[in-house]
Image (cartoon, rainbow, N blue to C red):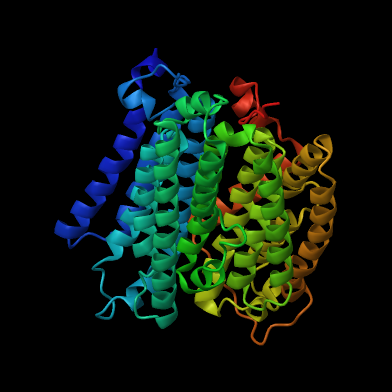
Length: 488
């Protein structure tokens, strides 16, 4: 009864209304403590997250018309709506810890003006991510993608007193605009070839042997260039290190997790109609190999943790592309969940440490003596990112490689195994600094109760899913089929 009363689009509407209310309070309630807005946003998004469990899947059909020809509420969409909401809640918790840095960056010492916008923009980003999860038409894909991207334009350059932040904002703006141009040009070509923008109808048209397949393949490549920027795949990754290092740390975490997850969901839906072309799989394999090699080798010499996590993000995009090449939607989904948990945990610790000392790996020296809890949290995050057994990261890599073995993708298996070994080296550099190096000063590091609770839940989830991954599989069980199907 409750499921029938809640329509899927109402969730996005509720999130958008929440974002506008936060902006109204920011503009007119000047005496209110701005961190109250963040707590209110976390509470409201938590309520929306609970509401997603009362949604009945309602997949769109090829005959759907009106709004439902643009939007679907299938199990994959509902799952990633929850993913977007959970990511945004955790990022807002990080932003509360990061608020003192934002205050210092706003003209006028101690000013609260603009801080509410810092808490409101992730809510609009969340709405865009939720729309992207349900988008099955190129028009909806583009509109939701731009809602996400424009919010990130502002968030990346929010601490505008920092020259590195302004540089990151300009680079992200210019290169993101370029990628959007490729995406739009590819959509125009697809519409010109097929006369459709709906993905299901495009699949039906592409099955026609009389179609100009060369033009369709060229259009797909243009779209892949645009989406390659969003997921940080080689050779479209050049923006990642500088933007990740220069952006505010919670925004970097949001870019790394939310934007990447939404990009892969869209990529899965967009590629499905084009998998009838044998060259598409080969192209994805090449991109995956290049992404794995570049991301892992470039991470090896890094001494700044934000840059290391930036190159790590590129490397993890390579592992996810293995799943795309092997058309295994379940492996991709589980890996994205594991990536959410371990990346947000590492950034949650980094937010606290960077405000005390800095974001160099050397700043973590002796952390086990200064804060055993933070050191253990970062240890779990680094172990999961590296793929140590009994962590979610290990099981995610296991599923990805199992998919590659099943599809006999020998090149991906060999390259993936070598690059996993590289990952152990640069992730364990952080562990060595925390547990084997000595700190210049032994000072305790305060952690807020809300942050400690969030970190504790992330630690438990990483270990739990590494031992018992069934909850994720059950959440995807209604699909009963891979997200993409390879046509013979």
